[in-house]
Length: 110
Image 1 (cartoon, one colour):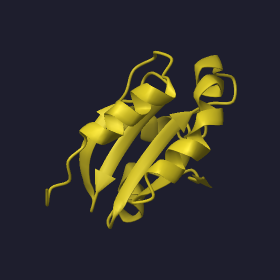
Image 2: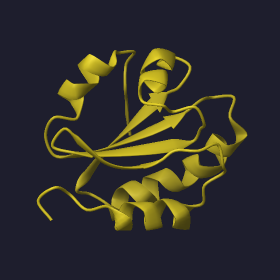
Image 3: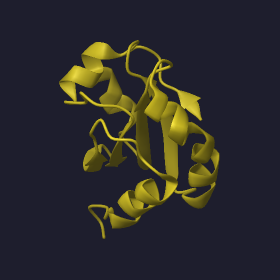
Image 4: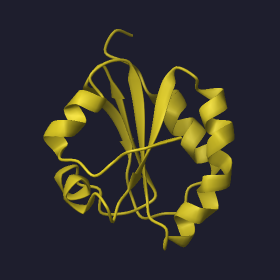
């Protein structure tokens, strides 16, 4: 999974402007993030139409605040620059919950 460097929300627009992108917000100290991380390669493999990008919440604290990400692990999905869904809360997430979230997304063209 690609790691997002520190950036502003304005810079993020460039990252998510085309195709489908899934931002995965986490932090090294977060036990619930550590719980879902081993499942991420399988989730990425199941959804090859999404580009998954890891976002270190601590490194990108301003970006997380701009996007109202106050709990981790969290996911925000984009299609061609438009946010199409978010799974943002402080709860532990299972592989099945993340898959259900991704399956519930519809792109603007759908």
